[in-house]
Length: 638
Image (cartoon, helix red, strand yellow):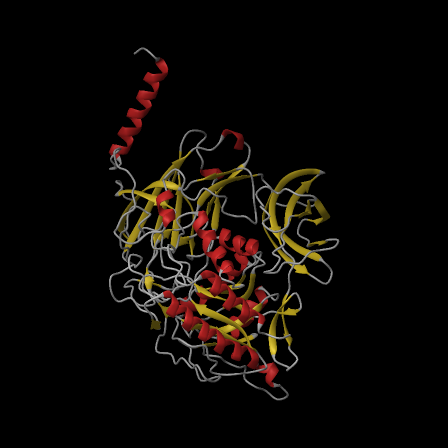
């Protein structure tokens, strides 16, 4: 055959195969899930070509971007070793190295280093723009090189970070990215939630490395890097603080509000503009919306945003996003008991404890459809709230809560469990702090600040939870004040499940002056019960239930499966659940303002989910479950 194009293609393929062979990876190697654990139905849809290709940041959308998810080369070495010359194989990014869908499924220790490598080409249409390399989440410590030069590092397993890699790019051809990850998991410094090196019971398989999308975007020299928005429902207005990188004197920012509605897609940005406002870069922008519509679980109305940076009368950058108008506050009912209010109306908040774990991806949902599925089913089950339990989700998960009308309580992931400290669950000021090191305390505040700063744009979030069950709890008043300073617009649940504290009472102070946060939160298993009442606070039941039902064929492990109580069929579970709902309504009448049922799905050895871990079986009659839950929500009087 004398086709010059064919010959050229053959030479390219041969050269590529030689490069792969030199790197220690067989060209015949194919990716496949590993292990014999159960999987979700979505795992079958995952391929290296289509893995999580959705735009990862729905609050700050640009058209010039490139997804880097897919097969990367990887190697595991000693933590102090230099960059390896050979790879161990390929890993499917963004699934953690321990997961089935990574194609690796290896245990990773504190003595190891995990190395990643990939290459990309910069699109020609990006010429003249700056290129940013974005990581949505890497657990825990990441060091990044581009074309052999270090561009930066980051610690913290739950928040996004990025680097301007423009100065490190070659003038043409392939660009190389190398990432080194260290993750000690349970070293009592790193926030890690339910992850442990030796999983059992309520503690789950560790997650190490890249576990959310990696991507590139092109930006101008001056660009919009972030924003926050606070709504005022009385005025029907939005107040935006907009961060601009590279701003100059005279630059302006303009905000256009788009009439979006339920199900609004911020990537499309379609709809009529209903309000505009502008200000000098660095100043807040206030936009008033005529006839503003409020967001609620019954009507999750979203407004689109277009934010533009202007210089000399010309647009130099623009991003799309969205927001909603809603207010979360506290009011007293006719008996003088504090309730949580949404848009100045009392609303009983009721939802499941949601761990956010997947049998095939661990921290990472196998597909975007799967990520949205849990939110949709929570609504289908008749709940109006989710407590996101000591984990932070990808931004798209919070968008789906905004879209489907789910309120969110957001936990801070703990950096240890109990460390000899007393956990008091019946009264104030009897608990004890963990013996946390100075490094652990400083890192807690660093990561909590990053989490709040990243999530505060999502209006579904209505409660921050700094501590859970005395795990990693210290300096509670300081942590609550720190949270309040970062975000004064939401309620704070100082310590879910016990170890409640008051401020030291000084002369002239009332009990109201000594309280910390807004909420006192009891846990009780299995039946709903309040261990303490304090009507200076909002009283909630932060965890109860845990009714277990092992479903054969849908279990993570053959034995050692447990729930707080266990039954053999869904009808028995529904009867117990309904009985608990009756007890819960009695607590609502006494002053309980919210409740969290454990839990959305089974997780590893826990079989107390409303769904199995693989999401293939809903254990209870869905219509009856919804009716029970809606009845509980309706039981609270204003």
